[in-house]
Length: 90
View 1 (cartoon, rainbow, N blue to C red):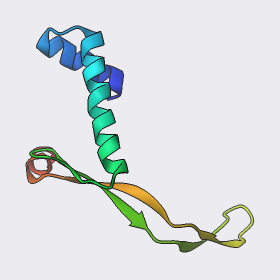
View 2 (cartoon, helix red, strand yellow):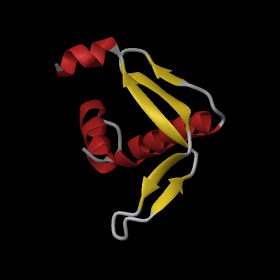
View 3 (cartoon, one colour):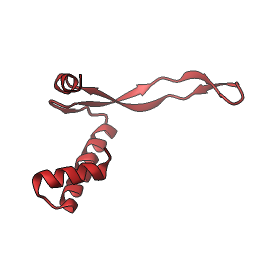
View 4 (spheres, rainbow, N blue to C red):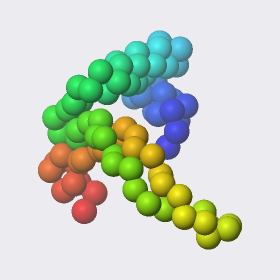
């Protein structure tokens, strides 16, 4: 499912206009992104948790040339499902 399909589903189930639903989705995703950028954890009870995690630098290699290189440290987002969502999909 992509963002447009999600918008269509919510619009159909709530009888709200697609433009209003899309605006709400944009605000929601913007708030989640902003919180993660600040280093805050985003927890939606019954769904899951997103958090920003620092990944250490690590050795790697170029698959085309085989040359060794160092992959730099960076921030990544980790998502863990809630027990409710885990039970629902399993």
